[in-house]
Each structure stands twice: as C-alpha cells, then as structure tokens.
Length: 321
Image (cartoon, rainbow, N blue to C red):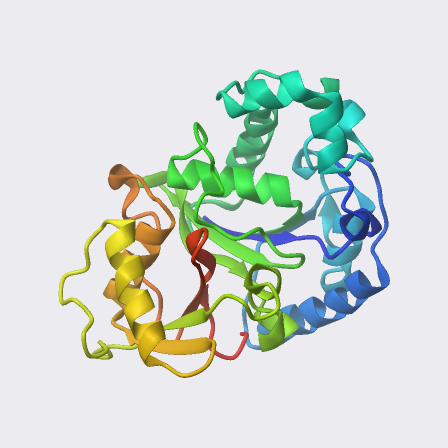
C-alpha cells in the first residue's frame, strides 16, 4: 500500500507557537493560502490520472479544512488526530518546560509511558496511529493507495517507525515537517513498518519556501541534490561512506568551491539515496528505508556549522508534480 500523508496547513496555534494537540484551532490567513496551493497541486495530479482508493482526514478542523479543499469527499476519522497532550494544550515550549520538568526529563530519558500533560503517552499515541495504518492496509490492499490529511506528530511518529528510531531522538538529522508537506510511505510484506518514497515535500509552496526556517534568513547554505544518472560531480567519492561526517565533509567541500549560498549537486540516484541515509542517521539495518529517487527528483539539505547537515526534504519532484 502507498500511504500519502499530508500535514495540515498553518493554524493560529502554529503562529503563536502554542501546543494544540487535540485542540481545534482554525487555520491562519497564511494557512488558507497554503491550502489553495496544495489543492491546486493535488487537482493537477488527479487530472493527470493519479488515483487514490481512500481519502481520510483527521476530524480536527485544521486537517479537515486542508483535506476537503482538494477532496470534498474526504471521510473524517478521529484515529488520525494529533496526540492528546492534556494540560500542555495552549502552552508554549518554555511554559511546558517550566511547569512540567519531570515529564520532560522522563521523555528525554527514553520513557514512552509518560502521559503528555496527563493525556496520551507516546506508546498509546503510536499504538493508535499504527492501528490506523493497519486498518488502511486491510481496506485498500497491497496495491492500493490511501491519502490522509493529518498532523505533524502523527507523520513524524510513522517516519520514526520506518527509520527504526522511535526509541531515540527521531527527528535527529531531519528538518521539522512543514505545513501542507507531503510525505509518502510504502508498506508491503518486505517493509511492514514502511519505506520512505518522499519526505516533507512542499514544492507547491514555491522554491522560496524550501528550508526557509532552517536557513535562518540565508545564514546556512542550501544544497540541492539532484538525482541524475551519470551525474557524479568532480571530487565526489565513487563509494560513499555510510558515515555522516564523511558525507558532510564532501558536501562542505563542494559548498566551499561554489559562489553564493546555494549549491546544486547532481548525483547518481543510488549515491543520493546513500547520502540521505547517512545524513538522516538511519540505523544500519534500515539502510534501504529510503527508496531510490526517480531521475530529476531533488533532495534539499541545509549545512549548519552548529548542527551539521540537516535533511529538509527528499525525492521532491522537479516541477512540483
């Protein structure tokens, strides 16, 4: 089954930096603009013959509004809600740190049975979303496609499961999921926990939207890796090391040779896949979790001297298809 996951557009709580969990904040004015761009992209896909067997949306209005703009027939399903964060609802991150330090310390120590603000624990939340995926697999079959409009926590949890990283900092090496970003997973007998076909794709929002927050107004170089057969750049190793630092060193070398804050680097699709695996800290046993990108697809990285390389998106179509 191919599972296409779309994070909701920007909500008013996103703007204020407050946790919303299962609260029902509406979209912001900018979120409505994002919805229009996403809907146009999905309509173009449909017109080109892209078909889905099931369309679902979380019943929280930020996801419902995002989904039904393009698919008015989308069914609502509470199983795809964001995590219930209890009394964290409406608080900022600093406020949560000040009021609930014990909970945060337990989470940092790897505890997954801690009820977030008295709401759901990560273990319960992940069990709920994993069950929702299995229900979809049973419904659409091995060769079906499902489209789900949901929330950042839901998508991040499923990506972490595919990467085998639910027991650690799942977001390490990965940028935050953007509003209206498209992430695509494929499930089959060989990959029961999912294989990533595409990650955090916001091509419909325009090139200026790529890595906007992570770049800090241009202070960090943006590298575009382009899947191109026979496109190995001069000086790129013929065999790419699986180790992150070796990949980063090669990237920084190419950035140093280039002028400006942006670099386009063509790589053979297999080499691009290997680079992404290393930069995303994928465990050795999951090295095939990122599918090899199609020629012309792009992956974007931000090179921050403080954080190292950060994978912003993966396998984004050249023209936002």
